[in-house]
Image (cartoon, rainbow, N blue to C red; front, side, top):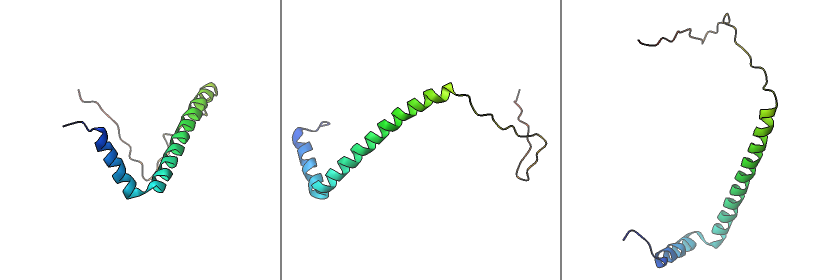
Length: 82
């Protein structure tokens, strides 16, 4: 009862083709393939960028001055309960 046979899947495929048509399914397949290819290229480029980023020096970080007070800044002190 929990598993579908080959005939069930063929009927589902036939209904999908009748609803969407073969042209839309072809476009959907090519769009999906392009997305997967773009994802793989992005992952490959990302791993290459990480190796070059780790070898270069990190840019200096800006440190905010304690004397600078902004109208939207709330000065609080965090304390741990004993």
